[in-house]
Image (cartoon, rainbow, N blue to C red):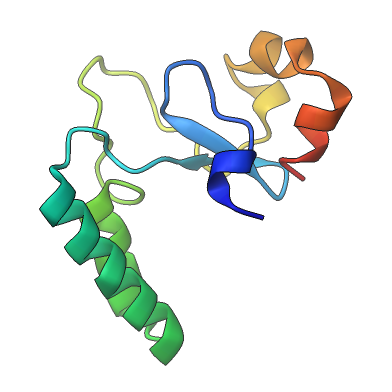
Length: 101
């Protein structure tokens, strides 16, 4: 399923995939930088190079230091209901929640 079809938190920091929060790409990246990093990520995944995959995800802001600057922690890997996003998660329709599973 395409990432755009998965539920995204209202602050744009996370999407829900396989039932857990996954960090979104840093929206402040310019298009050229983002496209280069996505290309690196796809190549790394195809070659099954975990180190290169992590490096590309870090360049995208999906791993490594968080890209936001309000001192909020990273909840990646947590089920939304166990985070401050619980009320948002509960407010979604069942079909929306199901698209994140």
